[in-house]
Length: 357
Image (cartoon, rainbow, N blue to C red; front, top):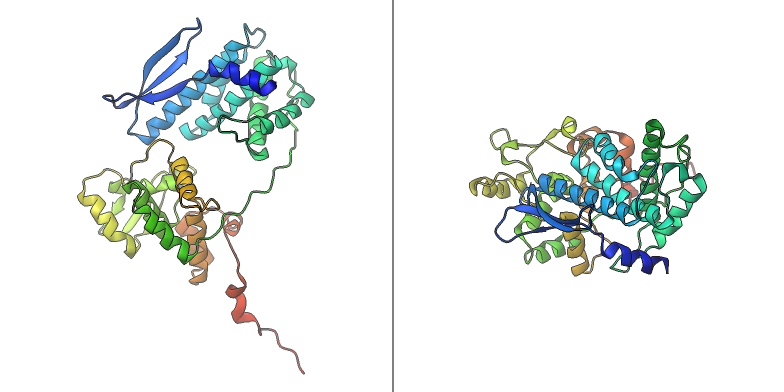
């Protein structure tokens, strides 16, 4: 009953972005304060991944506003009047903002359903209820989210409640000391040579950006979004590649030697006059997820390429410090997470310890 009621409500209050045939910009459709459905240009270009992220963040923000309004007039610390603005101030990058706004969208669903119209209504106990509510709610696809996603959203809510206290909308933050145990994340596997060959063959029927991204990550271990390298960051004289905006932002920019196997591909990119090695479509990660489903390898993700590269470096005898430098790992702890030790890796030491007969 709860899910069917919620689905009926949200069907009328779901902002969306879309492209028009003869326009380079994303457009957004939403319901405004007087209940009128509006369509307008976001001003963000659809062919620019950075601006696409901003358009999606705007959609999430408008959607949260719609959801708050469907609960009726909210008084006493109206969530909608300050939460989106707080998240915008709190987040340093568009990607982070998009993630927080998406979390807020689901929190707004729950606040609406439970009629918690003021921060003063929030308690430790009723927030625990959110965990069960969120992990049991089915999307249109019939799928539910995992416990870790719900916990991230509760942590987002804890930040929001902290701001509510500072603004005087609540006397205390009941979520400040909340400790929830996360599910242990499944380790991403290392690709075998056979899997790499299968993927390469399957990619011949896919868009060129996927083929290019796969090759770059396979030979450098970089993350998906890092495969979009500005061509002016590729030095064909010094034979090096600079990743200007890796995970962690521009302060974590780094350079690596250009792998010999990549040079022909990068030369072709340069001759094509492209500004970047790849141009991503909308939701590139989801596109890769669909690809692995298509080739019946649902246990794989694009990030497996990074795991594979780290482990191949280790087996090649590359010192840990150099390997960390090549993949831009900030700590040995993070680097260790990527290790996939096999019995064969230590087989040479089988008789290292000897005892007298």
